[in-house]
Image (cartoon, rainbow, N blue to C red):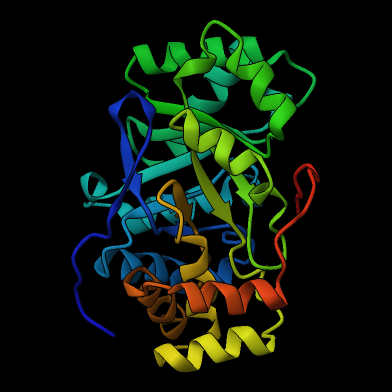
Length: 284
């Protein structure tokens, strides 16, 4: 697969919003200055393939990843669904406003399509949500949500005055880490809250067990493609793998074209069994 491709399908969210189902992660980008050109080229290539969601955060390389993104989206900002996150220690009302301004400056843009609280910290969630809504009303962000929230934290946030404007929860989710399948996924789906799956390949450490190899062979693709396609099987899911090499980006892009059958899913469940009880969330 190479050359320009059309945009990937959209995932519906509450508030009438939608975002691309498959995007580009930037975790660990911006760390090594000598790798910046390759990282920028990778993001541009992904955009050329229609993977028009880029996920980043002020935490990644202390803003370095956002600077990589700035170079990648220069001259094509309107093509991109841009996501960033505020660190918990910065998530007071004023701190959130200031953090957003700094992210916007590093990204070279006047707005974020989606802004998330990276995880729960010392500041009350209601206060952070007030700041996020102020940013929305001021046109600095279009939508907001959270990341690494378990079910109890989501319920608490949902019960705040502005909680029902949350549109997504970004979580660790892959074949090896699927605790959210027990209850959290359905809870979010019932309320129009999408799930953004980070590390869908388990940071390139996902073990290719027999079932995964079997399904990959049946579809004529790599196990990595199937692993990402598995995260995309649910209509409320968005997947944001990170890749720098073109061949890996091609592999990731193929996932959106894969339709897993009941037999495929059963084969994967045998080797990567779903949870049988509530296990909270996992983080890396």
